[in-house]
Image (cartoon, helix red, strand yellow):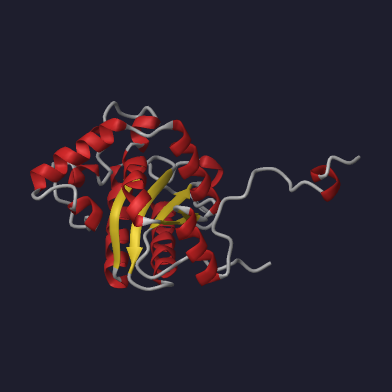
Length: 235
């Protein structure tokens, strides 16, 4: 069965995730991460894709992006993935697949969920117990958002810029946002939408996506659908 096209809309951000096959490592050292970031920056520049947030873990990564046009994201990620796997296999004397299938993408409603997704991404190393504070993890956009460094690969989203009238105000406001953490229900919600590649947003946003693209935008309940007799309480 052919793959369905991704849910994409002009100017709407996407949360991207990709994991290593069998949960294996995709980054073994700093050089791997440097090379991946270099490939990502170059491909996104060529395809006019804005990178708003990222984190590189050991066996997966998260990105928050806004492509300028539909279809450019798949092209850029395909280019990055192929080049990175070739270099990774050569350098580490291995062969075969590295990725666990194609990358997953989830539309994100800016006004309601974008900053929550940013926080989710940048707190990932803390949730994984790799570090005590998000800024202790080097390979993350959190350093840009906290005003600790300027990463030329990162394009601050307008909603982040609206947090304050100057860099110090924005960094302080974002620090408070990070420190507030994510409620367990929100964490489960974000993970479900990323896993099922649906549209993370309120009902109005999801209806707009479904009407525009003619595709389901909401998450399906886990497990097999119940038969009519089960729904009606019959045996």
